[in-house]
Image (cartoon, rainbow over all chains, first blue to last red):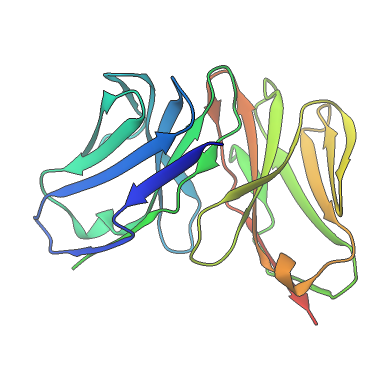
Length: 112
Length: 109
């Protein structure tokens, strides 16, 4: 069966510090991968999605970036965090040609 | 018009009652429709999907789709306190899934 991992689970970072969140998927090949952010009491905002290694599509312009160095690894990064970057970051995967997305446990980021 | 609209709630129902969660969407090209359940502080969990007009039943859950009206709903029969969560509607079209803001459901024992 497929499993999706995210770490860390929680993170507190000062404004201006860098960020790196990692997501890995097990039990499937060539998945579509997604990064979402959910601000407190808000809906899911799609940040990035990827259909293959090195292929990243950005949905919103911001100080975040994403990379996919391996088939089942997706990384979300920032060089300098803003207060507005606080939120619940969720990684999700779907099979090719499928819209069914399955979410990881998430990383709760607080920027202070 | 927002792409996906849901009543924010909170929707409160007594234990054992039927909870009805509604969702409207603006993209007529939407082909697949998903319902996610999100417990407080947790990530969303896929609980139902429907592709064709009509009803689809899975245990205590029934999804209803009316593409002409651009409306999809989720019924939860015999509601339990463990059903208390936020329910996200997610239509999909072409290459993306659009998540609604969610409806908060509270089942009162």
